[in-house]
Structures are given as structure tokens and as C-alpha cells.
Image: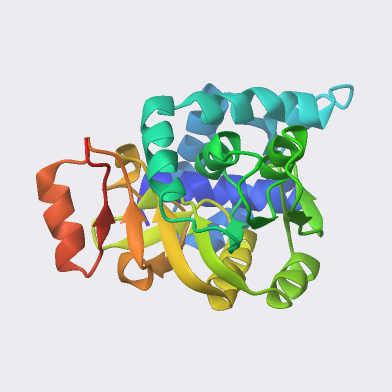
Length: 263
């Protein structure tokens, strides 16, 4: 595990538990006290954690007068606007795959949000989603057929997760599903930044006839915390035209099938 993977893991622990002790991280990662302290210094400099005696808490939790949704909103809005041109291109490509009267599962995420924004409200299909942001977008357009997965709310991703959400997803069938990710590693692992999300994505894949990965070119050749699939588990990888040729070949050699726009 490299430094960035370890930092992501520390943040994931904090998101789940609210606090963490240096001694626990030393044992978990099998590293020195100084390594964890340097990791903490890095996360403090990024404004992500606040040091405590012998440990740390998330920065937004250090002031109890703050409203948690407000402190998380800027980060969410930043993610929505990142690589906007690429996400628009990917969403347009994804829309070409949706046929009338299909049951379509949109994973939570910022790229699937672009699909929700672009789909014509009179298009005859039914959307299933665990993304609160996606559902709000569809409902604000008065889209008539929207099914929302309930469960534990994740304020950082505006989505539902947990055993209740997974159980509900298992009851559905989808003709086609679109899933997102945080990173696609050089070895073709499709990765996300928190462990609860993997269960949701596995359930979506289980109930869907066709499965497509949405990943803009900036996500390739990088790592996040945990892998939930490989590129060859998808019927297609929908990305943008800016993905370098050498990375395309590497992913294709691993069994990945790309879907690009024609222009």
C-alpha cells in the first residue's frame, strides 16, 4: 500500500468511526509511528483532519457548531464540476445505449448525474438509482418513472448504502446499468474510496443484464482504496476521447472494451 492509498484508508476509517488513534493505524498498516504522524501532517495540510491527543478526527467534525451537510457540499460541488466536458461526452455516449421501455440503473456519482440531466423527460424508460442527487435531478424534470433505493445515507456522496439498500437492489431487475468509480488502476482494477460502496456496486452488477463503466480519462492509471471489479467485468467502458493510446491498449489487453464518441 503506497502513501496515497494509506491516506485514503485513513479517511475511510474516519468517515466510518469519526475518530482514529495512531496506535491502531500502526498495527493496521504495519508501519512506524513517524509514518502515521507524517500521514497526519499531510492530511492536516489538506484541511481534511484535525489532530487530537494520540489520534485524529475529520476536520469538519472538529467544530460541533458546523452543519455537516454544509461542510460537505463544497467538496461535492467540486466533484460535479471536475472534468465537466469529459463527463458530458461520456453521458452522451451512455444515452445512446439506452433503449425505449428499458429498466435503467444509475449508480450514484457525478457522471451518472450528467445522464440524468441529459435524458429527455418524455423518454419512455424507468430509472432505478441509489443516488439522491440523481433522483432529485430526474424528479425536478418531472420524469415520471423513478425508483429510489433507500438505506443509510452517505452525505459525502449523496447516496444510499448499507444492508438495507443492498437488499432492496436485490429485489430489482435492470436491463442496463451504469456504474462509476474513483480510479482504474494500471492492472485494470476498478476502484472506489470506501468499502461500503463495493457491496452496492456488486448488487447492481448482479441484477443487471448489461453493465457499463463510466470513467473519464483522468481516472485511468491511478488508485483508490479498494477494487470492486475488473475492466473485463463490464460490457463496455465508456470514456472520453482524451484517453492516451498507450492506456487504451493496456486496458484492451486486459479484456476491457471501450466505447467512444464518433467525433
